[in-house]
Image (cartoon, rainbow, N blue to C red; front, side, top):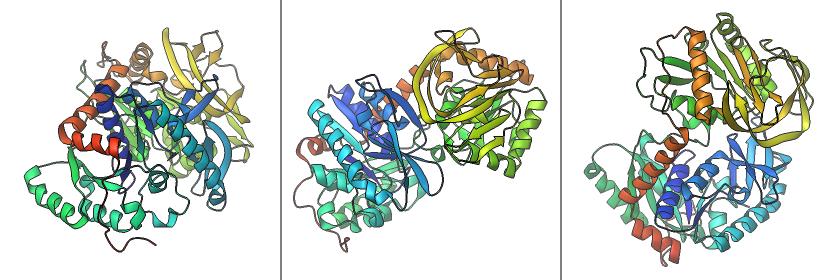
Amino acid sequence: MLIAGTTSDAGKTVVTAGICRWLHRSGVRVAPFKAQNMSNNSVVVLGPDGRAGEIGRAQAMQAAACGVEPDLRFNPVLLKPGSDRSSQVILMGEAVDTATARNYRSMKPRLAETAYAALAELRNEYDAVICEGAGSPAEINLRDGDFVNMGLARHFGMPALVVGDIDRGGVFAAFFGTLALLSREDQELVAGFVVNKFRGDLGLLQPGLDMITEVTGRPVHGVLPFHSDVWLDAEDSLAYGRILGRPGPPRGAEWLRVAVIRLPRVSNATDAEALAAEPGVQVRLTTEPAEIADADLVVLPGSKATVSDLAWLRETGLADAVRAHAATGKPLLGICGGFQMLGERIHDEVESRRGSVSGLGLLPVEVTFAARKTLGRSSGAGLGAPARGYEIHHGYVSSGGPEPFLHYDDGRPEGAVSGNVHGTHWHGAFESDEFRRRFLTRAAAQAGRHGFTVAPDTRYAAIRERALDVLGDLVEEHLDTGALLRLIEKGAPPGLPFVPPGSP
């Protein structure tokens, strides 16, 4: 089954995960699939031959909902935007090209062939595959050659559900317009709708549900309520509000306030989620220098365009705010691209091709970009606690011998620390509970938040599992699961009416 959406961020990712969780708990062998994802939030997956590759982090989350290990086939095509006009193309986990508006069309046949082959294999190995679309299926300018939305559904004869975000308003118009812009052949596979993020009295919504069924000939298969616990593993940083998560009250007398800079090409913003899961830790995503000045801990996250985002920091005054924060002795953390920005110089003939540029000069390292990307899962220790993570970066420390932030299992140093300034290339390291606790304790002391007490019992993996169970519960309680099973088993019902005008 295909889960399509009226827009990006309509809820396709979480609805897919919720259906996957519900099926998994029902004893169904289920897998997630997204033919093509455009996101800089990715995770490292090991293929059957041991080769490391990248897929969208959302598909790794959906794999967890299915109770299976992430698989490169779950997201065969990943586009990682490096600018407004180009994206790195990851094919079955490996960077193979750069896509632009001009050359992407010529790439489509190869990408589609790979995606179709991956889904065909998964269909043979699992009882069900729940496929997530991308953007909207009614992007009529992109329909030719589409292999992610209705092109995928048509190729495999899959039924499709369209998800709409009622919190944004206009959900019924979006449902009708999405359907009416599809061709007759595409419409034959659209089997119904799902309303997402509803707040209020369902009785007041019912007339609209009845009317959309009457004018389209398709049922609304359920209304999912807004739930504040659904915020982990967002596909795109724009899905976050200004406050990340729902912070619980502090265990001690004081809060720890964290400001994460929302870079234009932020990568793996999900790293901040583990910090936001801690009681008494307020994590705010920001582009405001004043909020940097007010924070206890400042985080520079990863970036798909390190040199460009560093220039943006300077243009916006955020670079000065970061330096001023560090000068007070308060803690500063850089992760991956953010770590590289904190060094003395960046030598980049690969990503930006701007040669040598000055960094922020807060860590005694220089970084050089290599043509071959470093991809791998990492494990070791930091601050006297075990830590695990994963690496996705072209830049490496080419000079400087500072105190390391972490160590690999074999004793090699990783990252850098200089007083209150910390840097690491490891994504996901703060999901390691004891390492996170020790870092936050250190950060609170450096920030002068002596009344802050880290919670001794926060388990990030358990929080993620609970969030996935919430999604499964929402599907089970609020969607017509009998209808979902019939669609998965038998496909779209025949004779669904055509809604004009339809696309040519």
